[in-house]
Amino acid sequence: MTVSQWQGEAPGRLDVLGGVADYSGSLVLQMPIRATTRVTITPCATGGLELLSDSEGRVNVPLPEAAILRGPADGSASIRTWLETHRVPRWARYPLGCFLLFCRASGWRPEAGLRFKIASDVPVSMGVSSSAALEVATLRALEGAAAWR
Image (cartoon, rainbow, N blue to C red; front, side, top):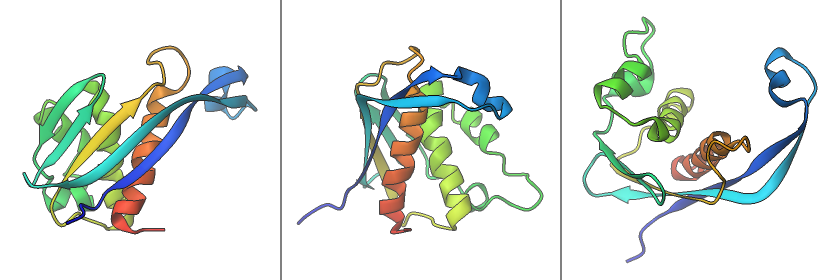
């Protein structure tokens, strides 16, 4: 029996010109680097969300309740509150935040738990967009998992 899996990847990138000026609408020049982040999502029998990182370790959280995944009109189901309640470490907030926002934007909810396997050779805290690479790779894998293209 073959287990379904969905993979996304994204390179780090180097700011050649402009740096953080892009936050103010300035023009920037960025270039992808060879270092890449890969996220592989597979079904998880535990019914929750499991994140496994080669460099950061493991995090397990329950599958969020429907109100968190839907995003209620009154804003009472805060993603930040959910992450803090489950004591999610900073590194895991990037892929989990992507998962939660993807569910809200697409209306998709997984039928069972998911395992996110994260492998990256993009240097962390070196100014080469390691967090952005993790987010893009996660969203690309989620697109496959949700068959949302």
